[in-house]
Image (cartoon, rainbow, N blue to C red; front, side, top):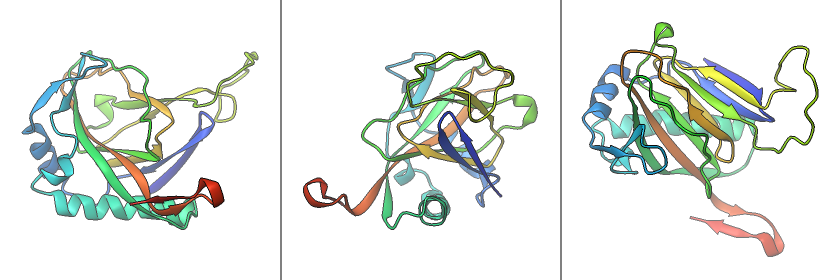
Length: 202
């Protein structure tokens, strides 16, 4: 099932319970080597940023996730372009860990896949507007048009695809378990732009 969220002046595509063996992939991710993140030492990231080439289930993961990315690009954004996943890494967040807002510069789209988690774990990903808000107008009720901050609840099997420019971070881990995720950065493949802005992406 696909849910499309439009908030923070931008979009997020949320695929629920994608067709993967989440428990198997969860075990594979847990066995990766992790290091402290350079930006925020509360969070650990995988040593490799090419983990889709390392996981035993890499072929089926790539097949399913690439299919979802293609669906977003072709059917909803309606771009006539191919894509490739360039980087992929895992994150590990311990109870009470917090991350900082960040974006993925030099990339087009980003995606996060969650192989575990349920309602009581209260896993969330936060998004902040990529546009600068000049005005601070009193709000009656926050909605997708007037908010510059938004949280999305995460459950086992969710895949979220969003613009890489969009500031985001995992919410504080308020559960008593370690939170794992698999993240990816994506670029277009082929000719983009026209005239003096033309560029061939390979």
